Image (cartoon, rainbow, N blue to C red; front, side, top):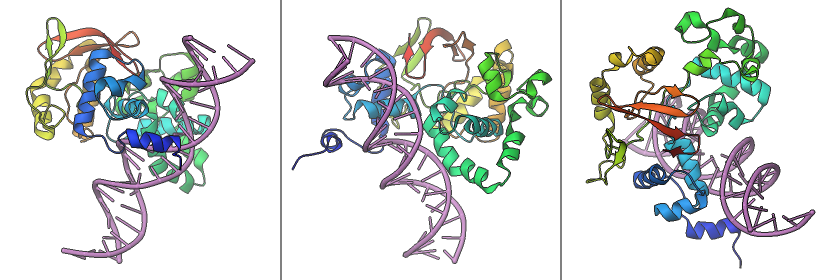
Length: 283
DNA sequence: AAACAGTTCAACCGCGTCTGG
DNA sequence: GCCAGACGCGGTTGAACTGTT
């Protein structure tokens, strides 16, 4: 009695939830080697997973820059609008919502938005209401700065290649959710890695307290004085106030340099010039 | 307190597309 | 042009969590 391909894989590869240790292995590997061939990642990283599973874990959970927590009203509006236009093209929708994954958006749609859209007979009116909610600068001061743009659809603006300021401002701000363990240190030569001397909770820290300590010690308001981070600190500050970040916060500051370069500052120092894409991080 | 129902979300699966040999 | 392997995407599943009775 033969096995289906998937059953063969099942025999060989571990399935189910990822343990913190597996996450750590994958993160360490990607940090040191970047993204190459996913099929070789589990082998090289010492994981008993298939490459597909590693890729998914990285993209949906471990990848730097991911936003976590609730979707904002602006994001909801974007999803509703984009879904109206694009349909179930979750990856396309996700491209317009930096820091959100297609999987996350898809889940959110099925959990919340589909019902809401279905419940309302006047879905169109709802969409219109949400349409470019992101442009409501009066409310949060972080979105569109030209009223002429407000009447245009998100897609029109995105397609036009214009920089949508509101869109820009909902960039994830690279809140590196439990991404850099304490074993990564920032020095004059940039990011360096030390083999962990002890296993903490698998992520290199204990969640709640250290997050609070870190945020406190980070001098958040001081960061706000830098030009590019004015809005950022406000945004994240708002988010923090609303309790939307319920994850260990290790890394707060970013500014986009060009398209993909992030300027990483860690309070007592900074480094820049590592390249990050949806699938990987490269120095 | 226990049982059940409903919800959420991480992960899996299968299929289509891309790419290199 | 064909084929195999890798990748990307959308649909689906099921474990964990939460709320209700």
